[in-house]
Length: 633
Image 1 (cartoon, one colour):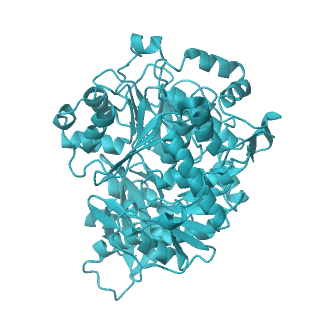
Image 2 (spheres, helix red, strand yellow; image 1 turned 60 degrees about the horizontal axis):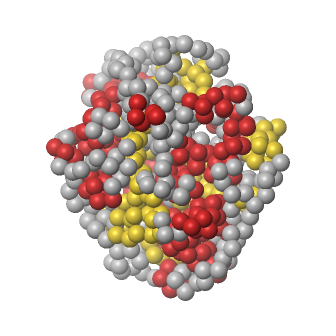
Image 3 (cartoon, helix red, strand yellow; image 1 turned 120 degrees about the vertical axis):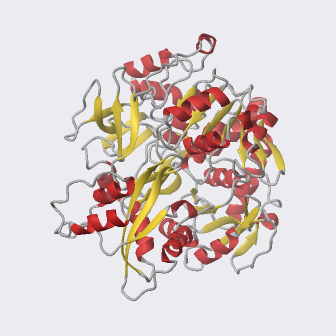
């Protein structure tokens, strides 16, 4: 908050902006009326009887009695409106192969995929697990599920067999759609091998549909069916059946403060309204001319809302990229922007800091003049990275939308609105129209003016999660117990004298690693599962590149050889969960600091990891443990 330089909207941008102050005024005067107006931008087969039913709080129902089909809103209505030849996706494969897919072509692909799923017995209410790289078959499968009223559960293609297995079992998925492999920096990741190990312990799976992506060869199992043998032969006659607004659209698993991932439930009507609305206004969208690029992975919620559902609902052209920013060279992102004339770029502060490290001379070699709006997602952006992004990528003219939201919220909650908001580097500004966010103190009392507090959402919003799959009580306990009647998912924030909100990060045991939420408990459980480990405590340490770095403190069972064990434990976590969860450091210690009741004091371990003076140790049963750990560090 020390950087209070203000960037008012450029006059020419503000004069023609899609978002306006009038949106805030309408939402302030009649919040539910505002959301009803936004909902009418979609096609409904039956109008709703009530905008919001909050009688069973914290379980919301939006657009009660209304019916629509998500795939119809993303595809059919655009084709019927005469824009079927508009490009839906410019797809760029990592090796350099490309596909240009129009809305009409995407609609046909989705209809065939939906009929293929029908042939495998998938119907309304079933769950389909998807474990695919960033290839067109991923959004095709998601939309095929939506067409049928089946819920999809996309699992990030970097997750391990155990992580995939656990998500399949929890969702009781009937079908898994995967690929033979995935390209990653020129190498093939054996997705099919991972999927086979997961399915071997997931009895609910009846069929595994395998897309050929890398053609590197794989074992064929009894449940396997090749995408190429199943989907292309299907008919393109597949009507979009109307679904209730509260029909489950997807499950997406996210880390919590226990070791078990949570299956976040999002439904059809309210989610689509929020996705389309925020995508339209936050990115100043002009679908007839823009080429929008969200450089995330569809395995995370950012890709669900801002690669698939929001952009397609708005009928815009998107770029979808399979690979990483640094393959085959550090020029790849800027080459893509130049090639397709990208107008909006939405990426993570972690990536921006990597670009900074590589040097401003790299983007300077490319024509980035097509860019109009820049966005950031996943974690708060530090002012230095904001300024670099603004100057070297946006040419000093592009508004930057620093968006705060979560898997659970389904869409943007806080963000500047380009053309309206005066921006301050590092601040998410404030709630968007129709969103009611507050800062509260320890007792849950809202306060105005400057100060530090907990960031809560105090009124329901259309894309809010509808619960945790199979665990109503966990939903109540996780999000609604700390501050009754207010949604709180663990973020602290500050408000400055101008009313700008600065999100400062987690106040619970969830870490933000390169924009990915990982629970300390999940990583600790993985470490303790190793035969050499007796106990483990995991903390996050501030990191310039990734936001936080994972630091693990472990005690070893007597008799185990410690030579090379730290590196072996790091790899164990990567194999068990994901390379994203791999600790930066594993420190072998002889004891962990504990209270007299046996609780590990992670607060003190954070002090050690950060190199700070260790805090109060008076409540410890073994105060000398902290000093020994600090000395060894």
